[in-house]
Image (cartoon, rainbow, N blue to C red):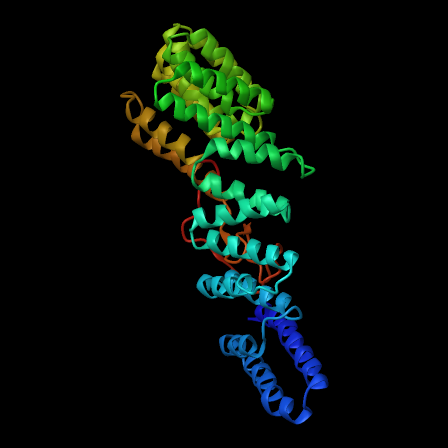
Length: 390
């Protein structure tokens, strides 16, 4: 409500200025009778926290002319932000229908109406308006930015590429990452049609557009695996991980498949061990556990995973350790359960127990005021904390 108040006050002020200007040009008595009471009635609604009634009064108070266009644009934008898209569309359509509207004002109204249509999911209408703005050479940057959103919603990746290339010349930040993903989406479409050669060419373009993107390498590795070229796939997957180590868990299954097909799982174990640092990724530890199980035995796998759980306990790792313990006939149940108890206690001690309902800030102790968003009384105990490492 406070935010809405600060938005509507300038509208009310503009209405009052308009009324005052009209009163100087016409009869003072008529203005006081017809405009001033409505203006103050609108302010009264506003101060009594009845914003809908206040908006209606101000809209009725304003006539569309060169002096009130900006106020109408502000009201239409306000309606859209509040989710009242139909009212926003009516205001902006009414503006565009005015023959006396200047070119710049009409262009602004077209831009706002296009954003209304986007909010309403009418992407074809929004696209036509943004294309019209581009042809008018007015608000070109915003028109292209919105066109890019529309084309992504419609999954028109070729148009996304063309629009991104146009937009790059108008913005300071390059759109290489976005363009790389657009090429990858086109490659995905080609693969669904069985056009592997075309997909390969598109993926090469994706890699050349953004040298830091891992997605083209991942998709090229999948193509190599389909062609049973495991060595090429491994090389591509290693390159992807070199670019971004966070991506490693996403390609572990492919790496396991390729190394297994080459009967060289010990080499994969050596490769993965260098990623076991101070903050162990549970996916890496579980992959190594699987390799040890296949190349050695479950006793060695249990010893490795138990050590990792002692250093960095996780629920997924704990679950796998329970499975390994359950499959060993020579271990006593009491010993297994006590070991599990230690790991669970350590895991729970490291998990945040409180979270802010406003901004999501997590903490181990109760704060009456959130240190992040400064909200009072918004931090409460989490009923079922999410696992840190998924």
